[in-house]
Structure formats: C-alpha cells, structure tokens
Image 1 (cartoon, rainbow, N blue to C red):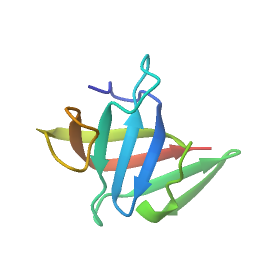
Image 2 (tube, one colour):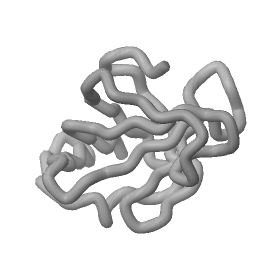
Image 3 (tube, rainbow, N blue to C red):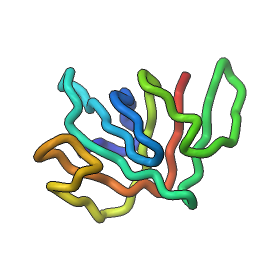
Image 4 (cartoon, rainbow, N blue to C red):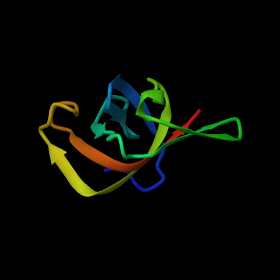
Length: 93
C-alpha cells in the first residue's frame, strides 16, 4: 500500500485508470481509478498547474491521496494487485 506522500511512478495509462509501480518493486503492483471529481495538480519546475486526469503521462511520478476503500481483482489494476480510488492526485515532473 502506498504511504501518504510516497512518490510512485506511472507505468501504464488508460483514460482514468493508472497502473503504478510502488517502490521497491520495478513492475506494476497497484492500480488507481481517477474519478472526474478527483483534483489533479501538476508541479513542474516550481510552477503549479491545476489539471485533469488526462494530464497524467507514463513515467510521471505521482502522489496518491486516497480513502480507505481498496479493491483486489479488478481489471483496473495489474493481476492480483490492489486498485485505489484517489481523492487527490499530485503529479511531479
């Protein structure tokens, strides 16, 4: 499970579904379903940009803020990995 504020690398992106690699793993080991109401903020070279989930790119480092619900066995995550539903996404570029 990602820790609060932990930097995670985006592995695969489909619309509002993101596969993540949470250290120390080098392969995708979690999924995130980014809803339309989840705010996405991008930090680039000291600038802050308010964006949407479509701004997330493969290779981005992101911080996921989420509530307790987690799902296992869903198609939005790698096989056998958890899927989270974030309340906030922070993209670090």
